[in-house]
Image (cartoon, rainbow, N blue to C red; front, side, top):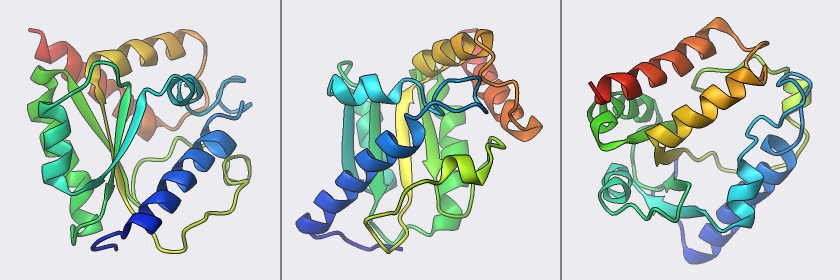
Length: 181
């Protein structure tokens, strides 16, 4: 767990995130019906629509209150003493509140989270630049994630995913639907 990143370390973390995106989640996968695990990542990076910031829960909330509509995704790298085991439950609680504001939070915590079922050998073909584990919270517009998810579903993207992951996707869609009724 990281308490604070010096500037030089922040640069390395951003480099690692970009590299992970390019080498892992932007690569086509048989598991996802020939699509990349995150088929929208490459275009978002190329079009400068991804922001990386550092902070804690207050910084995550700040981004929802100061959203830039020229951004597809804000990645907040956790650098406070925030206990990793508390990040996912906090995001779940916030997601219930933020649906009305058209936001969703996706935590990425080492050793936790819902897996898609993608085979490890297909997903892990890279070496990290940073030795120490760190957590991230992805902040996105709920409506945009929902639209992308529905498009991916029509393409067969989810056909091999675990039941647990599909439940996660459907719960997110329900939050979106309920927010507008």
